[in-house]
Image (cartoon, rainbow, N blue to C red; front, top):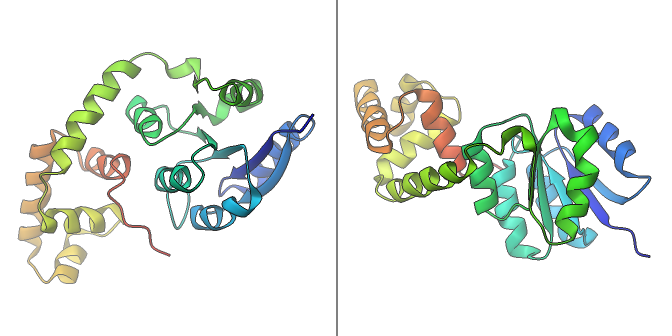
Length: 214
């Protein structure tokens, strides 16, 4: 019987090696990658059945990579293995095509089972975070609709803030005052109904608004 072909993607090399050792007795690990762009470039030629990837990766985050991979390889199963137990983030991952979502602390006990489940056409989410999932899908739909109403300038400001720029740096890059940047920032927060800068940045990631730098 043909063994399931697996690709792994995570920027922590030691973790990649550990997961590979965990899976290889039962599956065929055909590739390992430390950044999202390398994964996207190599995956089609490797013809995987399942891709296990992190959300937080350099060059291109896992959500954006997953979205593009599903366009190129619509039959591939995406399983996100991440540190985040944020139900909104999990909901966004499933909306973009994920078949599974589990946290790294449970990989040793759940990952093999999750792969089997997704290969059978089922979805898998770690029991650690099943509470509140339905509500998170509703909230994400509302926020995504709101994101369509952001102005081009607001999206530019949000992109730069999400890259870790200070408001002063953003103002310099866009040739506007720091006060203008602050105005755009707090207008977006009110519009999107988020209360902190961290929530604003998280929204940008969840909504796949960030442009990848390659």
